[in-house]
Length: 440
Image (cartoon, rainbow, N blue to C red; front, side):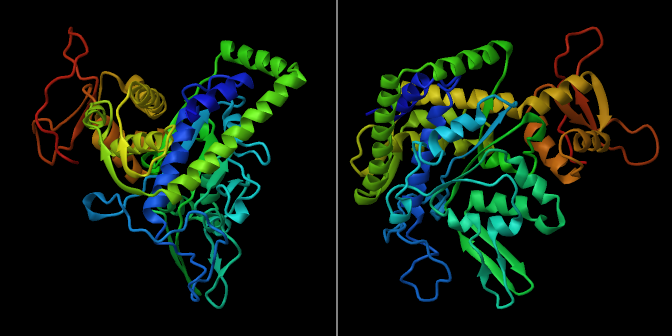
């Protein structure tokens, strides 16, 4: 069975709307999750055989004792694909999460996960503290409770509204929420020192979530760790949703029975793939040259290249047949389409702020300090250092942006001037070739 096609057709027959380019990314996220655990879970923090382990995950189906097989730069990388969907209310973000994770009916949900059959999954709470997410310690220095990042190690944790995490970050009791999210979704490390001891462990959970455009906050570095899926809304799409709801309500009993049968087949396939990855382990990885050629195109920024490589790995992990051994990440027309679709959605979301600066200051010269203040006010929620990073990563590569130092005409040090849409009077607004731009 081609699992991507099977889930896409299942969703379409259930009258989901606008999911053809989004379902494959979720499937690849599952594949990348399995690859990551196969490569890293020999170094499990929660081994019940260790008498000093202060926390165990019973019946974990992903724990093993094999050596890592993918070690670029002589280091064990993290290959999880975390997903962040951006869309207006009613755009179907929650429907996509429910398709995979809804209790009882989700395609990835397993009632036997606690017995080691299937992955642990959870729809996270709408409100959470840093301690609830990552843990705290009691007076004896012991980690208390069951923080979600540890509880879902090796599983999928979803938030219907991811903004609840950075809203918590603004509260006195959870000021390290975003930092904890950054490190745990990147390297898997959770580490913080408290008055009575350390909270320290590694976790392999994958995060899926949705957020509304006005609540999208990526300046902290989340954009480096999350795949961005844009879910647009329009009058035509709103009408399509209404028609889909009507069609869902009118489905006949035999149609519902057939869909339930297909859902069970997909569930069994996903569990079997997880078991196959553990029973027929990967011993190495090779990539087709075409994958590197695609990643090296100018539209892919340097800090995004690894994200797209992970997508290709996840795609290969979920192919029809599993044989184990060396995983060959092959180039194909379907992989190329998947990469192109995901890049388009990412650019639409990530470049929205870029368009805001371009439209607001087109044809203007601003001092570097004033530009950073404006970006801090408009984009990075008052974080001046984040504004500097945003300029380096987003404005500097643009042909219509230039920095230069004006010739000195008086006393004092002349600062850097930033030109948005540099152009000559009477000419098309084309970038001018300014000399090497200095840092402020």
